[in-house]
Length: 100
Image (tube, rainbow, N blue to C red; front, side, top):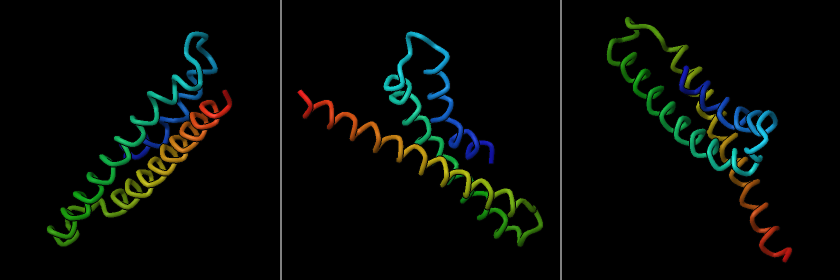
């Protein structure tokens, strides 16, 4: 669940960094935060899947099914956030390419 939360927070943290730091622009922060969000989202999915498989293997005695579901949901949200930011940066690149 922690990895999913970090995946969700990665892109907004990059945006906040660009607001409070003069040398870091929004584009530069996106180049760093988008891959981090994608990587953490994928890792969160893998970890949630493993937790669910462990819960099934132990017939639910180990617990944690709710945490695995929450981690999966947060990982999906983090992936969607990172993919949306990647699309925005891609279209920005196209606009600046064809503007000149």
